Image (cartoon, rainbow, N blue to C red; front, top):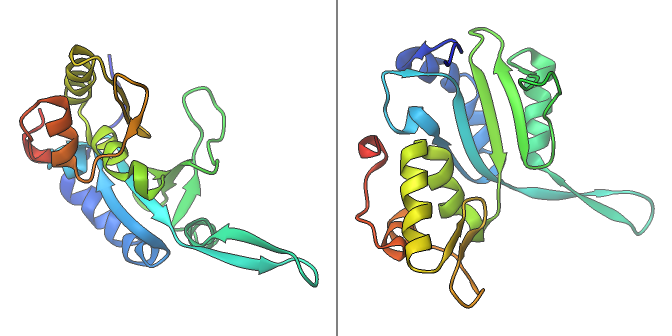
Length: 186
């Protein structure tokens, strides 16, 4: 039984509007996923898939280190009290390079940030948009063709070569399934 609190779509959109514009400026690509993207009337969280912009920090006379502008933006939002880091169900803080679990302070709505790369974008976005039944259908369709769907990377063909879908429609086509808009993935 899922006893996580649910939030109205309008409350989630209002929370999203307090930080998404600023966050998008730090990203090469950024999309809301999950049940909010599927236009569900209630949501358990806000999911955001993104590709960060990177910059270089000088560390000494000749050394530079790349850093994520998206990570820097999230840290500023935490400092201002817009977001806070959130612990997972095991009580561990999840704030890594790829996955960051946060909470919108004013509303208490969980906000999950998922970083990815351009080649992996459409596979990752489809997976994080879900729902679970859609992801299972995709995985099973690929298996029937002797392929394997790696939701956070792409698709492995029967010869072990990776295929990177050029759109969500392409992902469904590769699986041999009709494309469904996010709001129709139920």
